Image 1 (cartoon, rainbow, N blue to C red):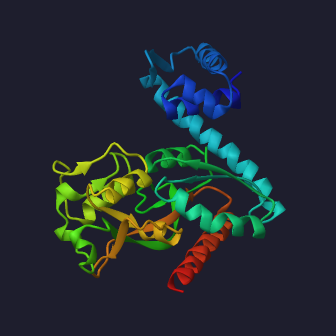
Image 2: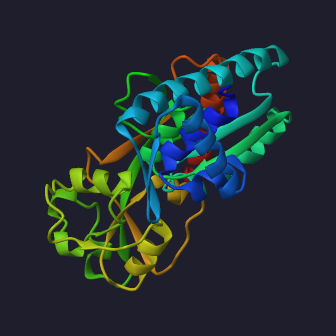
Image 3: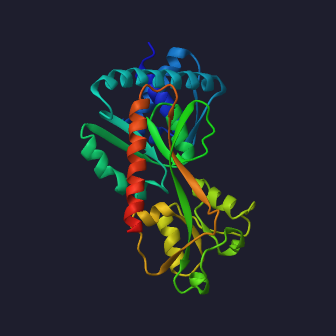
Length: 303
């Protein structure tokens, strides 16, 4: 008999394309994960997984089963969430995904307030890139995500939180550091330092600087904005830094932050969740709290 365990393991394997990572996601051993998938294949009488060296692929027969399994897993989670709603707003477990260029800077502004106002909430954080968050949202593995718009997924609902303007981060000893407001269109491509491919902040910087190609960019293999800023401080180039970083207390005498001329480039930070989720009131309450904390940080910065 096919069980929820079989379906959860299959969905996790389809997301990660790796038995080891899927096992970690489900908090089981890799042999246990492999045995459950093999058992499911035997019960269904078809191969769901093509096993390769170091990774796996879902077979053509397995793709439709994975899609239906993901829907079942998400529906069961909705049933659990619906029952939990009777306990009140923001109570119990909440799997919150957040992109890496937001998490280290927004969480310090919000977590203390969140804990004080909703002490019975049990947040479980998942920090990863946008594409992974969207897949995990759709599969019901996380409840809600904080990311940058746009989100082009009809099965997801979004709530705008705040506008995060960009600043130009320049080495303090750079001749342009005291040049006043910056113009994104005049940034030399060879001077622009960016995160590696796959980060939405990279794509936003390319768009705002009107750079259709990354051929001449000083692209780094960096996965964190902190690393990029260290390169800026050492004089290797400039980068677009979200205002969120400054509000979170960024203070490095080696770096000057220059505002952009209006209209200043910016990104829209939002919550996203599955439209079918019964926890909309939870997400709206969370959104109001995050926006409030953002505005409070703005007030402290102005003071």
